[in-house]
Amino acid sequence: MNTLEGNIRVTTNNATIEANSNHGEIDLDTFFSKISIWTLISIHGDITVLKQE
Image (cartoon, rainbow, N blue to C red):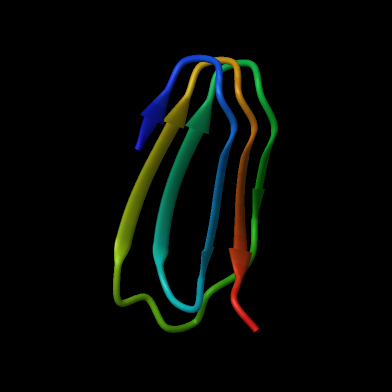
């Protein structure tokens, strides 16, 4: 998932996350089961990945 200005917010219960934001903040929860792979890129937006309860 790529965005120039927007924020990215993902909620999942398992994932391998690669996140990059040039000017935003990145907040990632820790996942022990890593079934899916997400590549998240933002130029100015924040990236948040939360573990689903």
